[in-house]
Structures are given as structure tokens and as C-alpha cells.
Length: 528
Image 1 (spheres, rainbow, N blue to C red):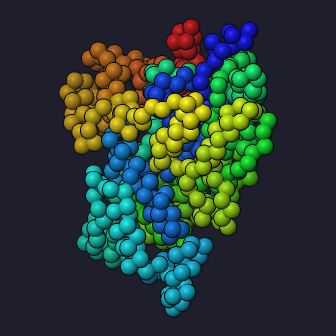
Image 2 (cartoon, rainbow, N blue to C red; image 1 turned 180 degrees about the horizontal axis):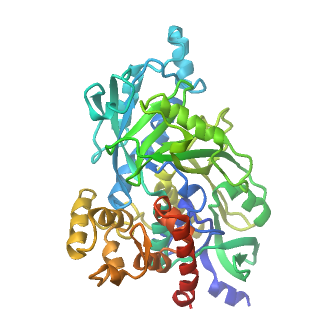
Image 3 (spheres, helix red, strand yellow; image 1 turned 90 degrees about the horizontal axis):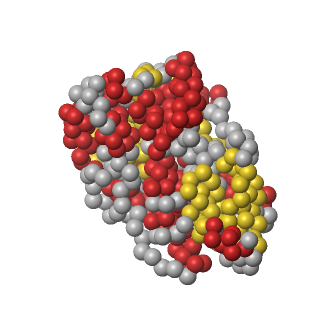
């Protein structure tokens, strides 16, 4: 029996189908490791689909002297742009300047300046913002993205929607990222390279015996299975401590701090493609970002969250906070009637003992235990921008356990559909509309922004709209849904319209119900 178990055993069993788990699965399979990944819900169903949708260095982290973290994240931005130009692209951010803007009093920078310039009374001076932007431009070896520039809000279109008291602004670069698709494409690539990806599969227990981990799982349908692995990677995000203690049965040496970030999606507030970086009188910042063509995304809040099993929701107070914050800048007042959707995610930050949620580090800690009780790697903290680097660092530790050494590779290998250059998106859209004349430019752009070159594979030999099958509304076709089910692990309408796309903002409740019913029936044929 032991010999059979060893034959069936994989090198790595990864718990958690968020960005870190799927990123490690992809990197490991590309280096020749055998991998099984289990996620208790859908991929990216937690933290990894509820971010502010940015690859960014973290401009405000400079005030906490997190220079190493910021430099690492800034360097990653352009690496990520090059390997996923369909789901990530450059975005300019406008920082309106005001003498009323203040520091978060918990930052080292605010305490330092308060000691030197007490007359400033906590204000964030313009020169300091410009110094921070200078560092932001140069810490990461920027090549693709544009540097900082000054902006006259009295004459520019960016100033027309703002109160006239804002005369000047700085403008800098970061990147947009479709966070949930990032996770799905990493999982898809891992599966294409040989990994077994199990969604809706909960890990019940794991024990180490005779050199192997024996892991018991249960599917959402109630089916139980036993898996064998040489090492476990605990990438459960907010649940990392619970998995260590209750599933694996070990004392967690480190911990996470759960911080809830809530966002609101409003009607479209302006007609250009730039985002705004707003500074508050309370020392915090929020973003206002163009979202899904017809909307604006505003966020985020930061609040302590009690427990991972408490479903995060944007409270009325948080929504009002974001509205009030934005109303300090936008001339046209926003109210709750302008909100189309809210979402909230829990960030599992490494618990470094910081006094406030804003001050807690966004860096990650990889804690490995390779003793006689069985090799185990726990992932604490991290941010979406550094997920790929986190995976590389994790593989360095994993390879030490296995006494292997293989080179890194993910920094130059495109995710599925991303095999084109950053500046070739418009050309790809044009090529798609030429081949499929029934597509509108908006529809083609949506497909390219989700699937890249795989858009051609989804549409296949279609020559008319009818060839795409059932029309579910908002340009969502049977052909596209079938692709998501076959290649992207989608099982329900929620998976399709709120994670693999955001078409839930366009579809009616009845249309979503019809899609859910169709998918339930289609699974019988697609997954016999």
C-alpha cells in the first residue's frame, strides 16, 4: 500500500486557489514538480477577486519607509505588463493638490516632519509628494511606463469634473489588472502544464506518515478523496492560520491580520481614461478609477475584520465614507442612488504588530517547516503586484527541501492569451473585427481585454451571431460561456458574471438566472 501511495503522490499539494496558490502552482509545474491544488470554493472567490484592481508599487507605503517593498513592486509592474498585456495595461493617475491634505499620523514620515516642522500641523506638503513621485519613478527601473508630470487643472479635461479650488495636480503611472482573471489564467496555465486543479474541494485533514502527507478532501457534492503528497503549501489567505491549526494540527508560529477593504461602483463620473488619487483630511487616500466602460470604481476602506469565515460586506457606513471622500473632490455630488454595486475583500496581511490597519506591512513572509513532522510552507501576507515574485521565492524554499535547483521562468512566459506586445492591443481588436465582422468594436475590445489571442479560439469558425449559440445578453454568448466552463473552471453564473467577467453590472437578475440554469444543464454534457 505504501508503494502505491508513493506512486500516486505528488510533490506539492497546495491549499488555496487565490493568486498566491495559483501563482505557485504555475511556477512549480513549469519547473517539473507534480502539483495538486485544492480550493474550497471557486478560484479567486475571496481576496483575489476583491482588490482595487491595480498593479502598483504602493506610493503611500513610502511614508512608512517601505522602500524595499515599493522597489520590488515597481520592478514587477513592467514584468507583469509584458506577460499579460490583455488583462493588465498602463494607467495614469492624477493627484489633485490641496493645502488641506494631511498625513496619516501613524506614519514615520509624519512623525519625523512634525518634529522638524511643527508649524505644518500634519499637512502633507507639495514638495514631499513630488519627492515621493521622484522616488516612485526611479526605484523600479521603469522602461515602459511614463514618468511623473505636472498638470494644470484649470485648463485640462481632468480638472473639469473637480471643484475649481483644485488648480494643480501631479500625474504618474501605475497599472490596471483584472484580478480574478489573473488567478484563473495562472490556474489554467498550471493545468496545461500538468497540475491537477480541484475547485469546490475542501481540505478536511492532513497528516504526515511514513514520509508522505495524506490529505483528505471533500467536494461540494459530498465526495471524499484521499491524496498523497511530499510537501504541503498552505496558501489559504485569510484561513492560513485555521488550516495550520485545525486541518494540519500544528501550532501557527506566525499570524495574519485581517483587514477589510470595501469598494463602491458608481455611474460613470467622467469621460477620460485616467484614474484619480485622492488625499483625505483624515490622512487616508482613495482611488477613483474608470471601470468596465460605463462605471467608476471608488475605494478602498481599511477596517479590522474579525474572522475569515465572516463574509466581508461593504457596510452602509463604509459606502457613505467613500461617497463623502469623493464628494470632497467631484463637483457633481454623489449619493447612495449612484451606487450600482459594492464589494468587499479581506486582506490577510502579515501581523507585524503595527498599530493601525493602514500601517500594517503589505510585504509577505514565507514560513517553512521541513522537520520530521513533514515539510510545510505557510504563506503570510503579500499583495497582488508581487504575487509572481512571491511564487519565485516560495520555489526557492521548496527546491531546498527537494534538493533541486531549476531556473526561474515566469518572468518571461506569457499567460494564456497574452502572447502579444503591450502596445498591440488596438491592432488585435482590429484583427478580431476584421475576421468576425459581426462584432462591434466595443464587443471585440471586451473579448481582447479578457482573453487576448484566445478570443480567436473562442469564436472559432463562426461567421454569424447565430453561430455563437445562445445569447445571454450584454454580448455574452454560449460560445464564450462554454469556453469558461471547459478551460477556466467556471461552474455557475456567479463564476462567469462576477469573476471571469463583470457582466453582472450589465445583465438583469432574470438573465443571470437563465444563465445559471443553462450552465447547470450544460455541465451534464461538458463533464461526463
